[in-house]
Image (tube, rainbow, N blue to C red; front, side, top):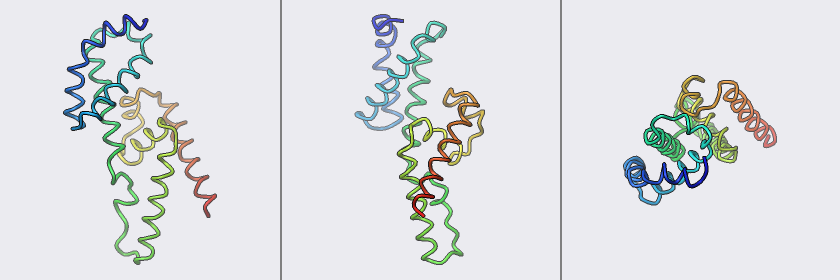
Length: 162
């Protein structure tokens, strides 16, 4: 699919997609960013789009997933570490626990986007590999590789700190 065909197919959906994104994220600038990200994702899949029967529905699902990924990323209390600091711990231990959780969160944000996404879906949202596959489109083998690389990178980072 060339650029002109892509524009003819997807640009007429712009206003409808913008309204959907705005309802999901609640901010006009952010909605426009989500829409642009979705168009980039669609463009990257342009060779596969010839097989799609309903391009409007495909565009809406792509946009919805982009917005949901963004909202998950923005959620401040993602980390399980921060969600359940044992009350039996002493105050210094609780502070150390929260500091480590913050370091994990910061380092996770430095990982490649695909590793971040898979790690969050697996460990914080509690999704199975099959659910992650449906959500992201990655194969289960790719999911396992991304999880392994993400965990290894975080583990290596922490070993350097100690």
